Image (cartoon, rainbow, N blue to C red; front, side):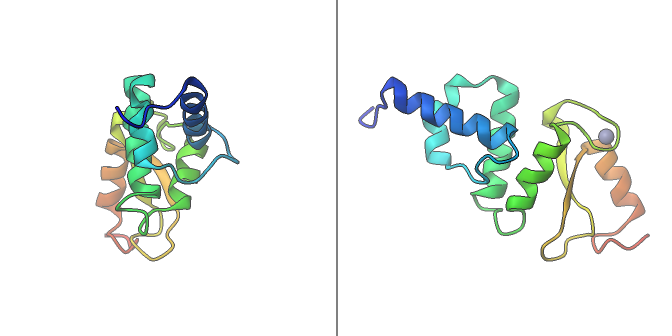
Length: 127
Ligand SMILES: [Zn+2]
């Protein structure tokens, strides 16, 4: 690899990623290019969450999600806000008020998100 980072460089990227995931004052974006350099340092659950949030804060879905997505995920402590389900593979970011501009998000598991979506349409109105 031509862009090998030294130990200190890897440590800095790793600490930045942990701060992105877990600290309220951490960065609200994380570069996929940087993440790819340190992906092997994470366990599967963190890989799932990092890719999920990088896409929504920095990648192709950043305009729909952005800072509010990482804030909601951190506040949830990566558990469903409704039932507490802890498996990150099933977490969704629910548009609380429907898919409106500048929507707020809740972290919900797939079951709770689907149940809510049966009660309310995509504009947030009761069905
Ligand atoms: Zn749930």
